[in-house]
Length: 255
Image 1 (cartoon, rainbow, N blue to C red):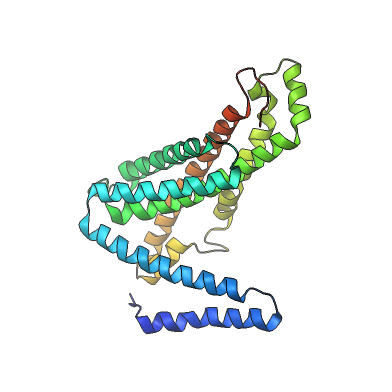
Image 2 (cartoon, one colour):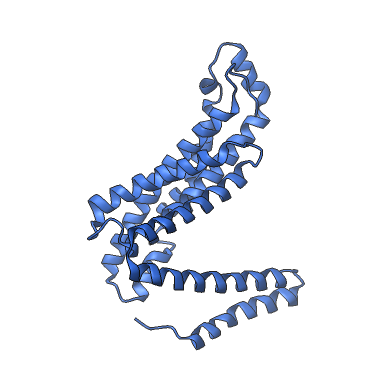
């Protein structure tokens, strides 16, 4: 594996300098945004790199759990903000949905597929949790945002179904199904072209670090299956949570 030095990273920054130059030349007004994004990327990744180096060396289960809880909470807040800030009880429900899908996915993968020496092996748990949480967060955001929008735009139709005797679940079944499908689209699209059109970051990183191409492909296959399960489960749970808050005890739409 080729070890990167500080000079190499400085040369890599030349790409961002070129991007900012292009933005300025074409008058796109993105120069400052690109500069901020570059600075945040450098600071955040250096901070994460040093922090994870300590956690990997320490190999303490409580430290690993603390990292996972921080990642989970940030993902839940971002997803809730994308869905709706007006639903007060949505944050803990989204947090629980992400926890459930991520925990089940990691437990299955660690116990039956990868089988590391310890369940809290940070070299496996933290990267896999990050990938699963990131995609589950996107699925929750897309599905939740689609469902909330559908409920608000189709209020008359939903209330008509309710007045004719339909239960809340029956009245919004169509919208919930469409929202779940929307949340799964990015993962399905990625699975359709993985290895043919795109090489995801995991397999690319492993190939660049000297791992056997077949082994790298195997790990990427596992990850794609993990993402398919976790994103589908997350979308189902988040839409269920929204439905619980969209109606009161009298089965009236209050969203």
